[in-house]
Length: 361
Image (tube, rainbow, N blue to C red; front, side, top):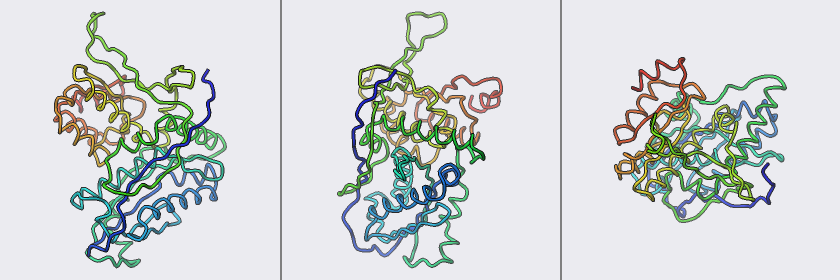
């Protein structure tokens, strides 16, 4: 049984440049708390609104005089940025995609403290370039960013009803806090694409246990000595050095719609291991929920494209624990990763997934 240890405070740094003058063009971002309806039912309106308010504060601290942040009652936040240079030196499209997905992914891993609860927010985001920084209500409703966000599907479970659902949702949120809390705060933000900047925005972060990757050898059938590759498995290390798998925690993240943030972090960490050990082949497990190519994987693709020798030693195992939300998107994910040189494996898929096997063959 894991021993309790004193929680250590840490911080995540979202870096931002100093204020700049308007560039003559603007950007309209829309962020959505995908699990806002869940928070309303599981914790009540006061806690849900508090979480929205805390997210609004974080964004306002980031944009400061370079933009305007406005929360909406349904769990959305509208952001008008009139200094796109705030997002760094990349071309505008790349910078906006980079910021949206980096922010959403990092926020998922950081607890938002509301009324003695530690909540993890599942965010989605979209953006559009504005030729004019003046955006009235009609323009906001007609914004391509809002329509693009409407097409983004939440990968977690729909909100349920009754005391049993509320109790399970709260248990899942505690499990998420335990698992994400085992990741070093600065490592978690470093796992995502960097934001070119000068000043830090800090997030409180706590850790009682530490997450580590254990290499488990995978051998071919009938070969007890030869190692095909090593599978990198998550282990939680307590203060006494004891190691335990995260039993049930990954399923909790899938139900919460937060597993993609963990999968991205793990895959990034495995790539770092491959970069340090040029003579090994390693495998990383990702949930079927994560097997869709979008901005979340942009920085991973760039890292692998920059060094194909790393990609050729990476095995991505897609696990069966949940149904793939979009088979066509999964096929694109597999195609993109294979084109870089990665190997793809389907881990423990049963007979009910024969069509997926055929599609990904």
